[in-house]
Amino acid sequence: MASKRKVANPLALAVMALLYERPMHPYEMVSVMRERGKHESVRLRYSSLYSVVEALEREALISPRETVREGRRPERTVYGLTEAGRVEFLSWLRELLSEPVKEYTQFAAGLSFLPALAPAEALALLEHREDQLEKEVEELRSRLDAIMEQGLPRLFLVEVEHGLVLREAELGWVRELVREIEEGTLGGMSEWEAFHAGPDEKTGEGAAG
Image (cartoon, rainbow, N blue to C red; front, side):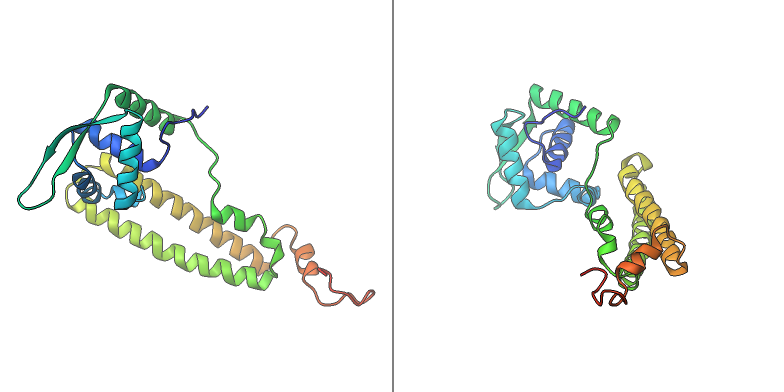
């Protein structure tokens, strides 16, 4: 069962993971995350990063180690993981890897109200999603191949693989749903079509009105 975290932002996990390796200042954290492609799995913005760093320091999960200056650049504070931070990071990581959790996606929310749209419109929208998914899958495959060509071990690319697998699975599922709507074989199709049919012959009112 998931436990309540002092700082639950996924970016906080990324910061603690980096500091688990070695002390760093925020600018270096951003550079390393981008270099390793971690910004693809964790939303990264400078403003958010500094807010997360402040929150982690406030909770005594990280602490300042030293202040450094490189050339004419402003001074930068180097942070390190505290013992409490190390325990929190490893506990959180183990939880994320071992415990499946319900994730409320926007697509699932849209699907739950799919019958509100007429079948023809729903079909057109799903076909558009299918096209977009095909492009995303192609881009993810190309990105993964490009990163692997740089010699980065697969161990450090498993989250990219996971994203690709999810997109491929969704693409296959959407394709099948589109096919069933086109062929009229989707369960409940007749009721769906009747709901969006023209004025009822007996009452003179729209079926959905």
